[in-house]
Length: 231
Image (cartoon, rainbow, N blue to C red; front, side):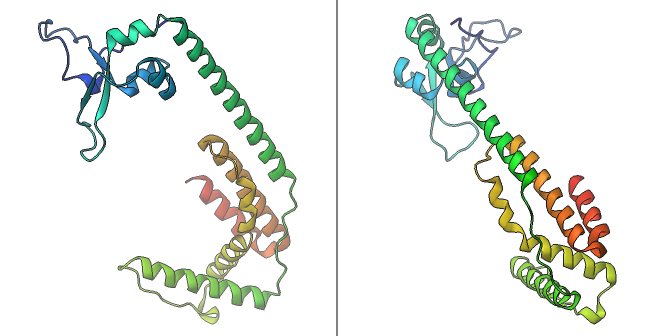
């Protein structure tokens, strides 16, 4: 496996460069950090097996309380990259990464298929019962917000004083909360892109199910879904 070209300068090794180089030219780094090694295709296990202990340790330039940065001599890195052992280990690491990506993609497709086909059961409540539960849920969340934030003061709402739009919003929020068990369908999705896609699909399915069960809330469901898609 051919060695990767050196970066112009490894930031973690900026203090350890040739001093007799013309200052108008970026100095050649004499050491590489672990980040620099990753850029060249090294994994932590490859570093441990082929390089061993670092050639230099320096204070972490980004986090004062962090462990010292480990630096490895460029000459030793380049020499290791010419060996058969490096070629074999780098090839194995590349194959493992490809298998992991393929497994993640299979999981993503499986979860999307499951979310697309699952039957979402929305609680069927009388208008009076739904309003009472929605109001209790709204007031509970408002009280919790007041406990978390000193600048927020809980103000319990009443059904007889609520605007129709506010009541519909509370009802949809309550029903969404009642359906959070479906979030378990997202288990096992760790990649940001795949999980975000599945969350969007699940959110749309939940809003559609609420709107189908309570036609009077369909417009509020569409409004909330549109609002959340913009954020």
